[in-house]
Every structure is written in C-alpha cells, then in structure tokens.
Image (tube, rainbow, N blue to C red; front, side):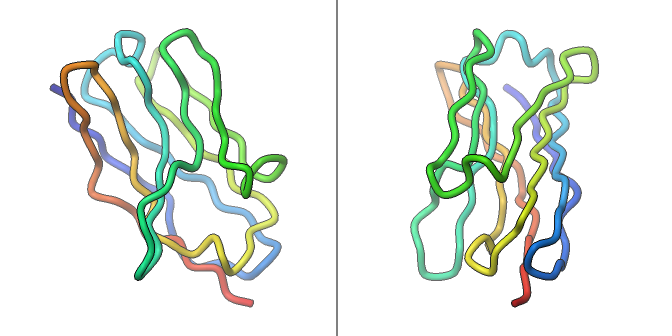
Length: 115
C-alpha cells in the first residue's frame, strides 16, 4: 500500500505557473508507475504526466512542452511543474501510483486558471 498527499494547487492567471508536489509514504522506486491525472467538472479523468518504474516519462499531448514531471527518490516525492497555464487546465489534479497489484490515489488538489 501507499498513501499519497498532494500539495501546491491554487488559483493563477492564464500564462502563469504552478508547482504541484506529491509525497508518497513509501519508497517510490518500487512503484510501477507514478504521476498525475486530472479531472475537470463533467469530464473523464485523464492522464497528465507519469513516470514508469524505469524512469521513462509520459505526457498528455495537451501539456507537452508546458508541464514537466520530476521525482526526488530520496524524498519519495513526485512534482509537476506547470507553465503557460491555460483556462482549460482547470481541474482537480490527483497523484496516482500503480503498485502492480493495485492503484492508489491522493485526495486531489484544485488548480484553477483564470482567463
């Protein structure tokens, strides 16, 4: 099992930046995949950016070249640097961890981008 705690959401103007952080309760090297999803009102949850166990990153097309996912293995954290934010990035952002035998989610953090 793993507990995930997000931080760093908030309100920002279009074109601004925010940094999200997710702290895991265990060593993240043993996790199959870990990263960020988001869910906007009335929409399906979608992948934003993730790390695989080997360190490969995957990004949604809509955030490539704007968002950067990073991890600090010593601190068991995964961060998401979000730049050039757009109103359509407004959503609840959720940290996700796939342990192979189960998927775990954080409680989510709200990101609101005003035009």
